[in-house]
Length: 200
Image 1: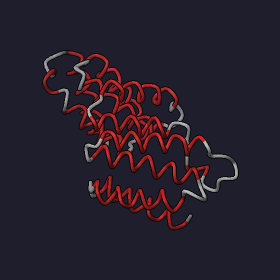
Image 2: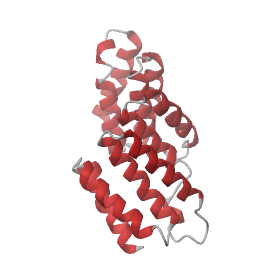
Image 3: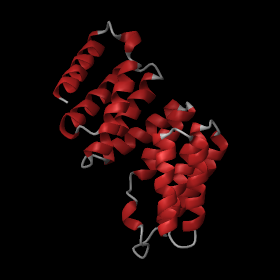
Image 4: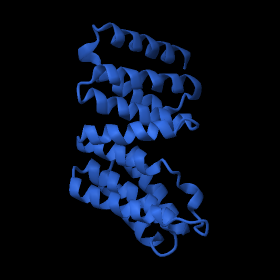
C-alpha cells in the first residue's frame, strides 16, 4: 500500500502542480492497480484522479468509466481497510463535480457541487473550493445571480480559513464575472474580494 500512496502523491504534483494530465493519468492508474487487491479506499481514490486526468485530457467516456469504477470501489470500503480514513463521504461529489466542470457539462457539475457544498459545512477549506467550482459552473450557464450567491459564500469561508487552493479558484471565478461588472451585485462581491486581498 505504501507504493500506491507514493504514486498517488506524485500524481497530485503532476495533475495540480505541473498541470501535466498525461503524467498524472499514468501515475494515478499505477496507484489504482497497485491498491486494487489490498485497499478499495486507496484504489477508489486513485480512480477519482484517473477520472480527473481524463477530464483534463477532454475524454468524457474514459472519465465517466473511471468515475463509475471509483464509485464501486468506494462503496466497498469497510473498517478493515487500512486507508479508510483517507476517504470522506463528500470526496466523490467533489471530484466528480470538478470533472464535469472541466468537461463543460456545467449543469451536471452544478448538481454534484451544490449537494457536496451542503454536506461540507464543517470542513471550511474544502467547502470554499467546492463553492468556487460551483460558482464557475453557474457563471458558465450565465446564471449570474446564483453564481454571485455561491461566490459570496466562498468568500465568507475564505475570510476564516485563508486556504490557498480556495483563493485561487475564487479569484478565477471572479474574473469570469467581468462581463457583468457593471451590475451592482457583481460590484459588491468584487469589493468583498478586494477586502479579502488586503486582509491577506
